[in-house]
Image (cartoon, rainbow, N blue to C red):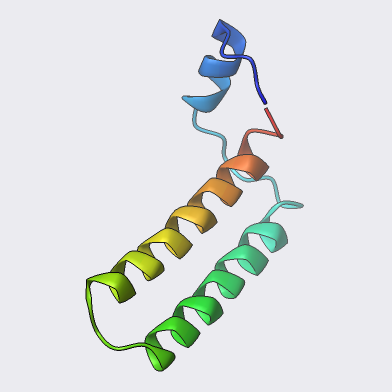
Length: 73
């Protein structure tokens, strides 16, 4: 787990433009998240739980993107 020192906080709250080499990583994560979200929607009834499940997938994609952008810090 990252230590919450100034360097870590500055890294987390700084915009990190994507490097060209990272673009395929972001794309793979988004595509996998979208595919999983579609499976959830296809196989569950519309409900608050369905919405929450898809929201958690979205959060996972966003957090994974942050892991790439922040370089694991």
